[in-house]
Length: 183
Image 1 (cartoon, rainbow, N blue to C red):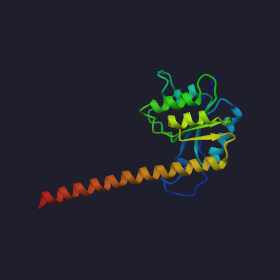
Image 2: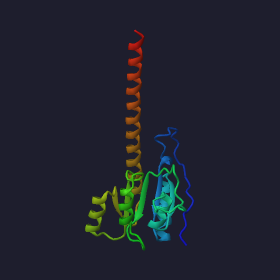
Image 3: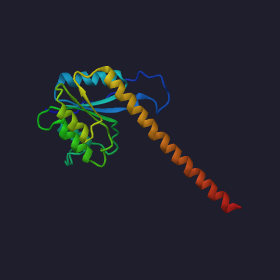
């Protein structure tokens, strides 16, 4: 029976900055193989990521609330930073999951990484063309996970800086308008 596993965080960072803190990264890992699921879960936790693992693309869609079922386990304020999925799974492939995520207005901006033990170039190209962030060959290495995490943290930092810059410009504009009306 498919089940969503409880997400946990292993925090090995001493950094107190909430933006730079790796535990902010929440990864949804999707793989039908329990061995591969446990392996990727361990790599992600060692890399200070919060991890939620599911055993199928269908369960991933349920978790994200994209299955169209009112009984799904998705959450309205779900914060996922990355989805890592196996390519070859029964029922729905990782490629089909990628397409559904990229069609979703709520989740299309979330990076999706496809994993496979098969190095088939047309498959890799098709996934990247459909919007996959990366395609990793199994077994996934700790260096792969750390590279992805660092890339995501830099992207989150750029987004945060852009938001703060816009807010600063808006505040300056409001201040200028108020100053003009008082003079």
